[in-house]
Length: 121
Image (cartoon, rainbow, N blue to C red; front, top):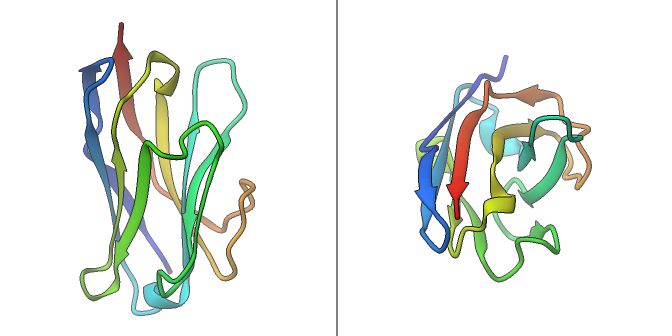
C-alpha cells in the first residue's frame, strides 16, 4: 500500500511563495511517478505538475509553467511543489498523487487528503 500526506498549504497574498510537501509511505515509492493536482470549489480536478519515478522528466500545466517547480527526494520519500508568484486563481485544494507510469490526467492510483492553498488579492 502507498499512503500520501500533503502539507504546507495556507493563506498567502498574491505574489507570495509557498512550498507544498508530500510524504509517501511504502518501499515501492521510488518506482512510482508522482503528480500534483488541484481542485477549486465547483471545478474539475486539474493537472498541475508531474515527475517521473527517477525525477528525470517533469511536466507542467501551461498555467503554472515558469512559476511552479516539482521535485522529489526518493531517499526521503518526499515530493515537493515550489510555488512562486502565486495568483488568486491558484486557490484550490492541492492533492498529491502516485501511480506506476506518469500521466498528466487525474488517472492516478493513490491520493493524499489534500492541503488548502488560498491566495488573496
